[in-house]
Amino acid sequence: MKLIKLLANLGYGSRKEVQRLIRSGAVTDDSGTVLKESDFPAYERIRFRGEELDPLHPLTLVLHKPDGYTCSADDPGSTIYDLLPERFAHRNPGLNPIGRLDKDTTGLLLMTDDGKLLHKIIHPKSHCLKVYHAVLDRPLEGHEEALFSSGTLMLNGETKPLLPAGFEKVSETEALVTLHEGRYHQVRRMFAAAGNHVVDLKRISIGGFKLPEDLDEGDWRVMSPDDLAAVFG
Image (cartoon, rainbow, N blue to C red):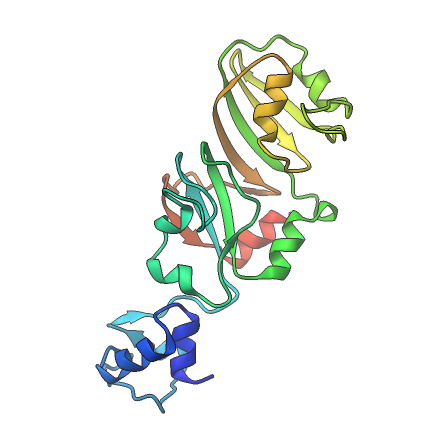
């Protein structure tokens, strides 16, 4: 792969823009030597304006999604891509969320440019269960666990019952819900069917990977091989 194509695929600009950047001296090696278009040292040695390059494909991120952000770059208003370096939106292949979160739902969101990994995580056979922490408008009534785990709960407007879901009471107005599937506004609609209203919803784990405690809202980091292994653990 040529230097121009590498930088363009990482989102640093179009091929013409990258070509201009190289000619302007923005791309060097780790010794500070300005690179030419025909140069191609080891990826680890290349610097863009003095900084190491972004990780190569495949890249998977963990993001602590805040409230008010949508998961599609095509949606109006603030999106999760606004929380990443602007060039990440131009990577090829592109970064996509692994299972979206609603605009008003916070917490653990994984993003990847690896299509095989994305489909593996969301495929039912992988059993990557998703756990949500829900804060409710009114106290729990005691029937929620039986209702959610029954396998017969039918959401309004749907014709297929939900798969059995896990339920754990945390307090009178808090609960953990574990889902085997991901339907539209599912947790909120489940509690609505139970006669309650969710006022705050946060995803805290996917499979065996939990939202890192040291990752503040709006922050992200690259997932390590151990992180990815934990998803399927």
